[in-house]
Image (tube, rainbow, N blue to C red; front, side):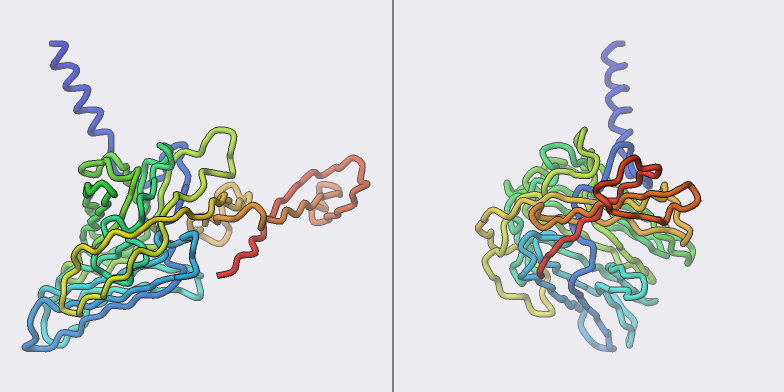
Length: 351
């Protein structure tokens, strides 16, 4: 009887691991895999009657100056699109879009009536190829020594679809998870998805990651946008505004030849590895208690900075309760009736 009870408890415990749509307690963004703010990719297939299927297209963006992989893990984003079925004279696309008005970037895919296929984004280091380099990232620790436990994506879509996540370790293990996303009847609100590492099969790839790939199933009429791809975990106690340094990873892997437009990606060589600069990360709080008079806010960005490039400014308020806009910086000031301290960090970063 005890054995049966223990088995039931074990199964119940496993079932508790699930995709969440709100920030897990005690979790914060530790690292950004892709904020889609740098570079653009564009892949499009215009299918004409009589053409063979499948039809493919790809595009590669490389940021050679991004040595610390800020906002783009591996400093390269590979985009691949395959159309397996289509009506004549229809256009299917997958691309990175930057909205100048909202100052945000995102991955956008559009599938017309009568067409179907898939597209994927690939993060496997700078190899200038959509052929997967399984160890291209050189063994990134995306657990941050055990404190990071969630992949995070922010997605909008209109028709039911799937996002397939594939993480490979430098030991050769491939870990996979499929995120099922329900349709929204034409309305496409942005939804947060926090995916526990434990949901991957197996879940042993995250301490030494060689590559990451996320594929969107472009079923008929699927229109979907992915706005942010990040890592969430627990912030170490006693450090409310700082978290572990960005994971160590290798820069440019050995170059490979990009495939032809009609080829399907396959494996590519393993790169050498060298250490990267260690930075600290900061976030900025607007002290609005999570409420904005201007509507929904975007997720707070994380900035990785060299401490030597941070300048702190302190502004001291002095005045009565009805005059909170008076600030001064007199170092000889005595008692402050209003003690508000704002700290700003300016990063002198060259890209």
